[in-house]
Length: 226
Image (cartoon, rainbow, N blue to C red; front, side, top):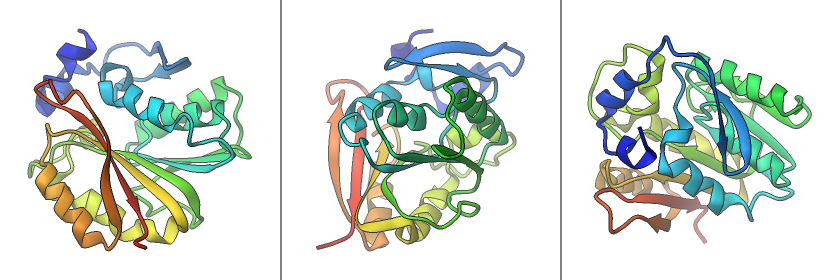
C-alpha cells in the first residue's frame, strides 16, 4: 500500500492493517535506515514523517532535542545524523521504546547521545531543558477505549494527552525553546488550536503542505510569549 493510499485510511483501518504477526522490516526514511517492529507507528507509511524531517534538518545542529511520541525513533536519529548535540526519546508504547532502542544501537548511539523513556508525555522524563521539542501527535480525538498500545499512535481521546503535554512542556523549555507539533486537518484543528490558546504559549501555523489534497500536513510552532 502506498503512502498516498495509506493516509486516506481511518484510524481504525490503520490499526487493523498493522498485522502484529508480520516480521520486522527495514526502511530508509530521508536517508536514515531504521527497523520498524510490529505494533509500532509505521513511520514509513505517512507523509508527515518526511515532512517533519525535512523541516527540522537545518534547525537541529548543536541543539538538544526531545522526540515525544518517538515511535521507532526516526526523528531522534535523523536529528543526531544532522548534528544535534543530544536527543531524548519518549513514548507511551513499550513496543516503541524497545524498537527505538534497537535502532539507536544499530546506529551506534549510546546514552551520552540519546536517552529513551517509556512515558506518558513527560511523566517519566528526567526534568531538563531542550532547545527543540517535537511531537508528531495523534490526529484523532474520538472518545474511544484504548485496547492496545498501537492505538495511542492514532487516537488521543478527548485530546487528553495533548493537554497533559502542554501543561508539562514549560518545565522542559528554555525561554528560547521551540515546540513543533505535527498534525493534519484530518483531525480537529479547531479543537487543537483552542488547546494552544489555553496553554499560555504563543503559537502559529509554521509550515503546511498538501493544501490541495483532501487532507493537509502541518506543523504548529509554540514558543514563550514576548
